[in-house]
Image 1 (cartoon, rainbow, N blue to C red):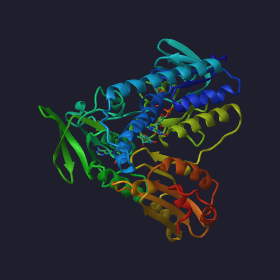
Image 2 (tube, rainbow, N blue to C red):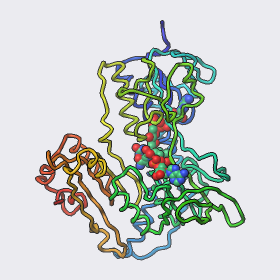
Image 3 (spheres, rainbow, N blue to C red):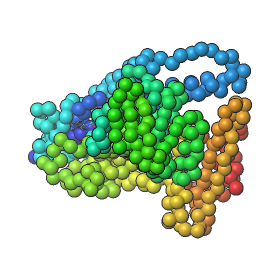
Image 4 (cartoon, rainbow, N blue to C red):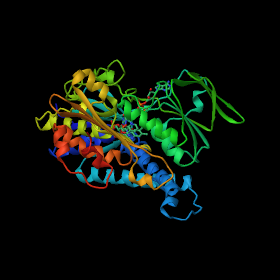
Length: 449
Ligand SMILES: Cc1cc2nc3c(=O)[nH]c(=O)nc-3n(C[C@H](O)[C@H](O)[C@H](O)COP(=O)(O)OP(=O)(O)OC[C@H]3O[C@@H](n4cnc5c(N)ncnc54)[C@H](O)[C@@H]3O)c2cc1C
Ligand SMILES: NC(=O)c1ccc[n+]([C@@H]2O[C@H](COP(=O)([O-])OP(=O)(O)OC[C@H]3O[C@@H](n4cnc5c(N)ncnc54)[C@H](O)[C@@H]3O)[C@@H](O)[C@H]2O)c1
């Protein structure tokens, strides 16, 4: 059968874009459908606008420290509406650049909602295309629990990038990546933040020392954290939104904005997966094998629509790997235990590899941890108390470093480099044998004993 495309991709987020670009290097016919903005969650309502807000918020934090370094105080105001409009202009340039690159590469972009008609046919707003191979890269969306009375008053991270003005009081339900990052950014702008999680501590999945250090750092900045707590109702009255809590400390928190950041779910509805015979897993994500192949041999799924790690580099790597599997007879597999990650909060957290708890489960008493906590040089000159935390998890028998964890300034940049070494199987004695760069925070990883 003659197909319109050798490869058709549904979704132009990081996973879909990476797959399209890689596939094009094999000189095959590639098409991609996108129902919203090219670039997906990451570019339009995730990593990139988030990082711009972090940069904006950092000015406020540095401004506070500047007086200790001899700078006179000045009365500067932050204009959120000017700033967020500039962010959206910047994002528009990025979208345009994506489209230009698609055009230059000869990748067809078809705008609209794509739905499977049969295993080889996809309909995009009335237009039908056929393809030999198909990659589903439809990503995910932030969800709000439907059963909470008044949930319509709450927003998700998507609307945080569209706020017409900053709230005075913000309540955040969910202390994962999104809740922690927004609590930190909004606090820097002077917003009164209450963060809550059904768990006792924020950032589940991270090493306990990271969780504690970030939580302490947020508290020191004035963010109120309520553990073992959730919202059971939201009511509106003349003073604002009343969030009725359930848990350790049942009370009512009054806020102007309520953000739900309790996880994201895959965009698998209205996709006609049943017409293609593609199966979902128990969580509603597309079920795939180690090569991102679905139960249909010619259909693959990558990124946040599968139940793996919801991170841009993961989606990109999966996308590229599938294109190589299809067109290059290479089948690269990804080691999900060694994916570096960061929480872009203040304090920042970053990690790669096993947490202490995961390592102990696997290697028992053979696990040895090296940990330090100290005040970074920058803060010794200021009246703010700030601590950095660094930790290496090591298998004592082989001396192999199993994980690295850090909280503090530039944690993401420092862990990024260490991740390469850990992936290559570096031993603790190799780290000890290396010289640090003085005076930096990162050099402390080379001085752990
Ligand atoms: C607030 C926030 C901050 C984040 N920060 C970071 C970060 O700092 N670092 C990091 O690594 N990750 C971050 N992430 C996660 C990251 O954005 C995602 O892991 C990544 O975007 C997943 O890429 P993807 O290609 O799988 O899906 P997406 O980026 O979601 O792209 C999927 C695309 O498919 C389109 N689509 C869906 N259904 C259809 C259909 N039927 N037809 C046509 N098109 C369709 C969507 O419109 C979308 O454009 C963040 C996420 C959020 C929400
Ligand atoms: N810097 C980054 O790389 C980055 C930033 C943002 C998002 N992301 C990705 O997006 C994903 C989704 O982010 P997220 O923060 O929405 O989810 P998450 O899974 O990181 O955290 C959700 C948090 O909500 C809590 N929770 C769940 N239900 C609750 C309830 N009813 N009441 C109170 N607390 C509740 C959980 O205990 C958890 O701590 C992340 O897992 C991550 O993969 C990455």
